[in-house]
Length: 586
Image 1 (tube, rainbow, N blue to C red):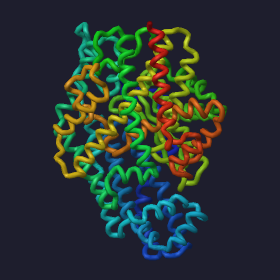
Image 2: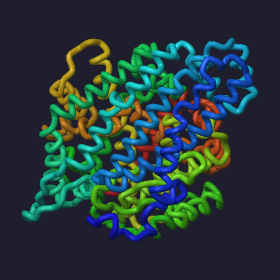
Image 3: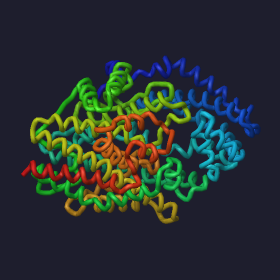
Image 4: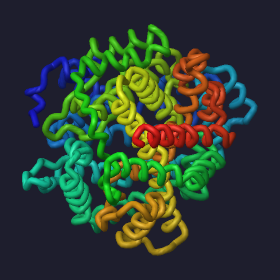
């Protein structure tokens, strides 16, 4: 793997729009640090419209600058997770953000004391509509000034469990090589893992799967202790803010719906046979006598696709043509202005994400390997970046940030449009089978797998919340049992799967993963039923930021998540593809 210095500049993101150099960053850091006590002029005075609005305008200016500072520090740290200077910079900024959070905790506390009549007036007439809406919604969850300050101050040490995992996972953890059927050893790391699982050498993918998960098993007690500590912190914050549990807090803060969450879990369990059908047809298509966990990722043998980064961008532009000419022009900007950090390098963050700060162009990190998976990952993260750009461009700071609940919709719409384009241009039966397999694999990973994850984290949280014993063994056993249920009796498990939960970073952000499943179900509905006839409804959704709650935004776009039909359509689509695939391999 190349060092970062060996990657061409055009394939590395340009962060000069954030800060031109380290001196400029440090100067801004020191300047903001000097503003820590500037809020004191408002303390005890937030009891009238004029002062409230002056305070919020001041806070907005500081928040924008702090967001840019935090984004830059985080992005630089992701370039090389082993770079101690970058990590020190990130720690500096994190501490500063925590200090600001503590010093501004009085704002919501004081403002909430004002009469509802004034708060409703400000919600309706001011530019801080979301702020006042949240104050009114959150009144019973906002504590006293001293209590809010204590909670803010605790954030720096209580929020470190996710960072512990990230540093361990990206910088410290090393994997043994995986052996193939001919005795050759292959490098095993985060970037190569999925490639090895997609190998047509069954021995190699088996060894890669077992070796990768077994390595986490060696640190099972540490990883379980770290995760359980994270759960304890989340439960503490939920209870301190007067929520019944972490799930209620997550749903409330997202303006989501318990009914939608429950409908998802029920729908997946009711339709779990669709996934069993998928494993059966994949087993038949691959000519296997048995089907094991490590066989689920292998792609069809008949087609091998490789892309340059430039080819991938052009394909994505063609695939998203239904969204309008301007969308393609925006994709061109992303390349020309170097929003994208393209290739893997030593110690680079192993995942993929889109990020940014208000007033700055969004940026995205991927680890492009030139395969179909990389093509879809690029389309996915570009969907996030386009959503961020359009939300920022069309909304003020208060209403620009969309919630996690809708975040995955834009990214998966891009993937589904890409799939339709590739299927529409497939020239052989083998190529069509390849893309059917790709879609069903993604559907399995996003709807089936993320819902399984949701069941796991709900179990973990409720176990602690209900004062029941929780340990590495209890988590391992429950996760193994979930795999038995979700994969069915015909799929062969391996013992090492019980450790897989401990390598999932999203578990450190509770009740996040189910939104991936909701995102795909919504995206499928949009791609099949809305975009072909009324793409403007979808574009307006991308521009809406957080002007409304997420379920309302999706409803306006044409997706009614309160209706079972939206969920059923997704499983019907998957079933239809499986049936078509069966006919093609007869």
